[in-house]
Length: 352
Length: 252
Image 1 (spheres, rainbow over the protein chains, first blue to last red):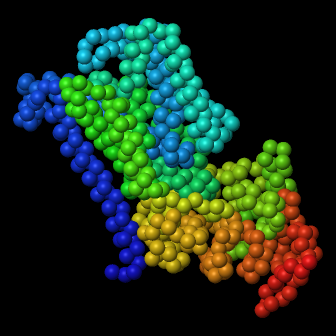
Image 2 (image 1 turned 60 degrees about the horizontal axis):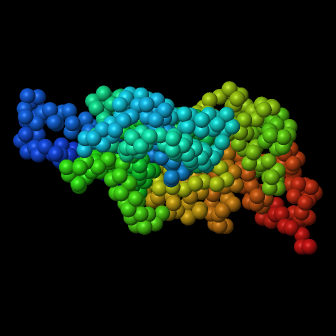
Image 3 (image 1 turned 135 degrees about the vertical axis):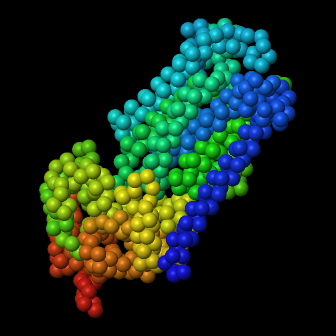
């Protein structure tokens, strides 16, 4: 083998290692899925699970197909979305803190939901133990939450477009927008009845158990084109990674990449938060962990951030269902509990 | 003419940065742009490849008006190395491969990989291929960045102060490399320089900017003590040493 081939073959095996890491993540996710189907109030054996998966008449089939599978798929798809959104936002805004949460999307959704529940009367109290509060009109609440999430980020993007502001200014605008929405939500809650306040608070506890099959499908149908768009532009994100001016010199229209990246990731984020409520930290940590493991090559970073996001959310949800069984905790509590120490660990360990 | 700049004007808001800039560059030329800080050198570079959108005047690259070219077409004609390069958690190979961006659709082709490998070898970077660029020294990084611009296969190379962070050996090496590549591949190089002596040693053409205008341009003969006094406000001697003019500031 000549010296010439050594460089290329070295590079190719370096790329192969990244694929292996991706494969490990897929295996971990598969194992978690199997384990997650088994965990729950109704104690199903492995045989009952396998039988229920293939035979719709079997004893456990209804529980598996109507309760556990939609919940698991919702966690996987939402986790994918969050991983990707964080990955793209951190790249295009050139800021490690960028995520749907920092851009005010979650707070906007919470405000929209509170508005629907309190002002439009979409919420009431329910006494079942599993979900203490039921939202009378989930469609109205979901729609209002989506609108709330999109309004804030649209205003930021519009300002960015018209005044061509810097990425730093966009982050600051996101923080300001979050503060405004939080204040708005508190204002509504101040004048609301106890049950309405309870309903809005419960809404913000992000919970993948809320998802029904139709929600799962909608999130899935949005995820696919978003992922395709981001993968197509992987090299544009790689260019942005080494500086704005270099990227421009390589023919990348950085303003357009930034605008569309933000728009698409905000849109998918608004949809998941509207369906599932506020689930923090996944969008922030999944891309950070992957960046430290496989580097900033977005050909690999985007898909692996997605898989890791799905894995984190599914593990968290499985823990949420198992830890205080039969009580099912909202997954949002677990992600933050797991996420924050994990993040500290990474920062201390890697020191970068 | 590979590049002709015709009456270009540029302003940030009301501040007029460039006024009536005219010059032409031929294939294989090695042009140094000189002038004090703030004289408009970097702005001129960014106007040439349309990173900055100039309002007045015209720039032609191989007889095509840059205002009518797409970003990606410009990137196939011009390789640009900005004053500051960010590092990151990517390998040298990936960092250079990125220069193929103007040609990449979904993913890199085997031709892109081959060209990258070739340029790494030419620049003696192949042994670093799998090192991360944030672990490189300033000189190595600068070579990587220039390699990236070269793998773009440009007709014009725009380099903004390529030697300013380098030690003496690397300064000479990088300048020699640019000179050799421009000759071998018939690329026009336009280089913003602060070190007049380094410019005189390697360049064959000079454009001196003052207050956003071309103060003078031409071959080595235009660099005179009078010019330096006017453009930089410094009294100098110019001595000929081993066939190269040497600019030495007068002692106060």
